[in-house]
Image (cartoon, rainbow, N blue to C red; front, side, top):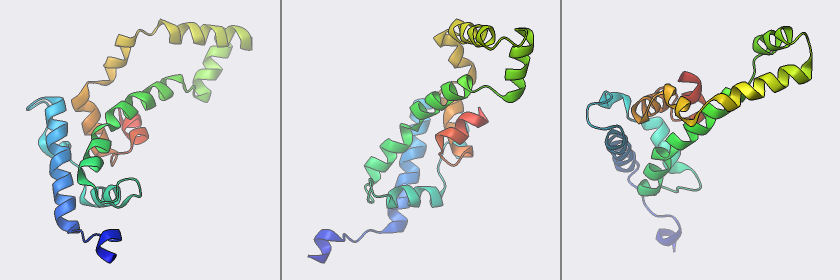
Length: 147
């Protein structure tokens, strides 16, 4: 009964395997030599935390897939950051619109709509996003802010 509900896991081996799987998967997604291999990995602490999460429960394959899919979350976070307006930018938009909120909002919306989907590429490709994930400890929001 205990083995069925509480499987024995070699934590060190699982963490090592996950780290290798993430590094290999990121390298495949980026292309050989596009980014330094040491910048595509995951820390042992982050790997263990991911493996220990309730939705993964030490399934290395599931953890690797989730981590490698974080690139799409970085794209979403980049879009969120593009929509975010700082106080400084809002003041500038309002001043240029003569403090007319409706006009400033309309101008801002037109500016955002003029961005083509190709413009999102200016933040880099897969290799830059995986490096940003590495630097941001595999947090999509942090990676987007880094980019």
